[in-house]
Image 1: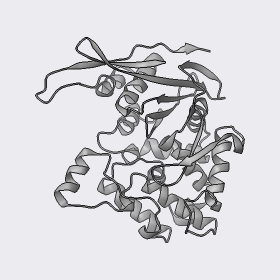
Image 2 (image 1 turned 60 degrees about the horizontal axis):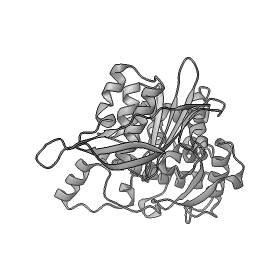
Image 3 (image 1 turned 90 degrees about the vertical axis):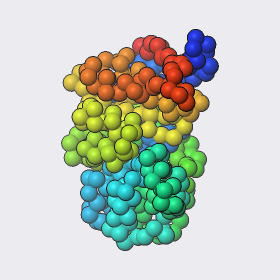
Length: 330
């Protein structure tokens, strides 16, 4: 189902298939576009559920992890200095070190950070991974379970078995209904129908105060700068909505949002088939518009994502991204 079209002049250059699922607090699909049941790899959009598994081991209390640490466990961060420093501090609290991490260094998501690294001839190490907060949290979880740190990332490790059970429970599926692969950061990553991702974020937004999922909601919305970073969609989205929604991106163009509203909580999940993140962000803002979520001012703050400028090397406008689909009611 074509969700977005890129024009160069008046000529169609690219089309992008998309899927959307919108559910209520009970997980019932209210609105959709494309296939709301498409089996999807949420990638990093699943991090809040992985953080939930760590939280439920008691690791946060045992090692004195803060709300900010919990936010970084849910992050796909920019590898800014504040992100790297917090990941190192989390490792120290958990009585682990960088050599225990089983993620790898990589170029940062942030162009500004990348330019700084190039100027300094800086070579990223595992703690610089955008997933280092999640890995540091998992090392703490393994230690809280009295399981070995070695192999914490492997599917057969007791921690990952616990994560798998937690993941299935929180998306309301049986253990064998969740498929698993290996993520870019070297941890197991789940796959399940898109509406179940929306259900996860509806649960996070609807969780009663003081519960583990509510703690995750509060950590992410109170510290959006740790969940992504300067210039990133996740950070600006949560800052703009001031705690009324939580949002998280996943690699290869998957996005999930939980919205707190007086008329009822919503969970939203979006997948763009070709993995284009710029198109994904635009589709997400379009869906918010269609659902009437956000004031004109709030949606205006996201305009550069909804209508990304398309210019050539001398600044001449060359085209536009067109999104106009309607959501189907169920």
